[in-house]
Image (cartoon, rainbow, N blue to C red; front, side):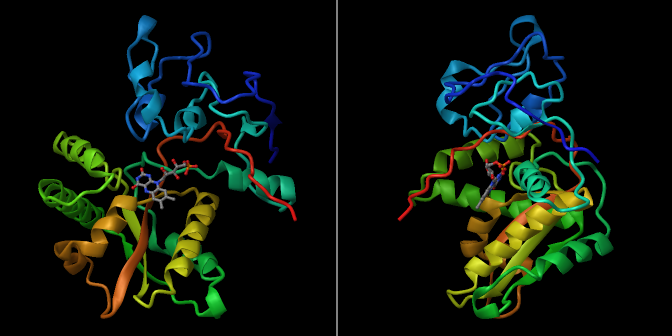
Length: 288
Ligand SMILES: Cc1cc2nc3c(=O)[nH]c(=O)nc-3n(C[C@H](O)[C@H](O)[C@H](O)COP(=O)(O)O)c2cc1C
């Protein structure tokens, strides 16, 4: 399979203030509206074009999901990139260019097909992931795979319950305003916690103060290996936070005695293909 890398067709070399949409290329398919993780892209502006109101500028986290999933390259890159991918690679022979493309192509997936991943495939991924490095090769990572989508929905609802409790409490947290909007999105039928994913991969270990990093590395490997199996994943940050303190959720997970959830990911078959790789900050490196 051929990997085609093209230079940034927008010829933009500085950070842009907002994303912009090319009316000639935009087909009004609406995918950008659906994939924006924070719902900043509204579907119907002038001539049926999607648009992002200027007031939303500060809320855009510049993840490039819109750019990535746009099938026609109609969305301007937020950062300068020389890695805009126009055809999806399948890795056969690993060479640095191919590996680099594969790794750069990893994206957080937040839209899933209504299709289960069979257990054998998940085992194959975990069979790769178990080779991830761990401090003094302790290999402390355990997995709880929530395979039943009904159970995933139950877990998402418990995270929302935790948010409701938290937002009514006196406790302060920078994410409190976000929680309120997530609760109302959930009440309107969305799943802002697990994004409608059919499955969850939960890395857990003894609460020994050391294994956290190893679990994070293992989950990173999981996210990186998954696309080779046609699967997409996304970190479940709110689930992780809720699981550290909300007893009904802790009880539902039923982890072994002394274990805690170190982190978790949602995963499943992606609904949309990745067409482009968004740019990122350049590597901030000091040499001595
Ligand atoms: C620790 C961590 C927690 C995250 N939690 C969430 C989450 O709860 N929901 C979500 O939609 N994305 C979550 N993300 C995904 C980030 O928003 C995403 O990685 C970032 O915007 C960059 O986009 P990319 O992964 O496509 O490169 C999380 C990422 C990390 C590393």
